[in-house]
View 1 (cartoon, one colour):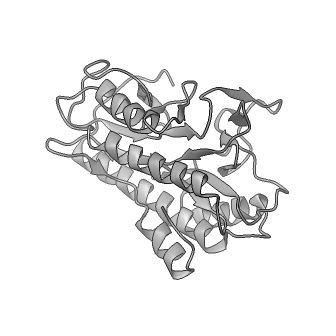
View 2 (cartoon, helix red, strand yellow; view 1 turned 120 degrees about the horizontal axis):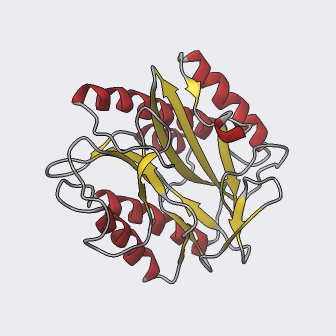
Length: 266
């Protein structure tokens, strides 16, 4: 964070779109493999190999020392989880956050997968979190403010009693992975920086089934819910539009894979 806000040209936005779509394709590769008996470490390996084959670089690996390609966060982990020996099992949920650097421009997106049959209350959490993402995106329009995005997300999920994580926020994205402005998932309408054409932001609600409180693990990265209840995370990179936002990343490829495998989506 802390980078200066700069407005992107149409040509730069198209470069960010290419990076963002590559993120979606990478997560679609993860979707092909995710399931019971699979380790999170194996998902990270296949994602890194896929990104490198496309001539891009994993954006997260080495960023402030983060050691992996993907942030993989099962169940009560909110974000920044380390891939490793954890073996997925029926009933788990798995949030996977991915970023790439293609030709000097970054794309960023996240998706929460269900592993087999998931508790109905957890399924609802995922559905409402994804709905909140799109309600936020609906407000990424020229003339509105960041607070309009934030309030739309917060209002939608809090009516169901969910907790909105405060410590982590969305962000600008472009020639750097994290740029200004910050995009909180809570706030007041009409507050914050004014949205203008040329702004590209990552909107990423991180919503907890229980309390909004989180804790950071000893590894310095992994963040989980304080009450050990599940958390969901969906993210798109979007360009602010005159009438509506332009969603630069995509879930289409991910969900096409899941549907073909008869794995449910919310």
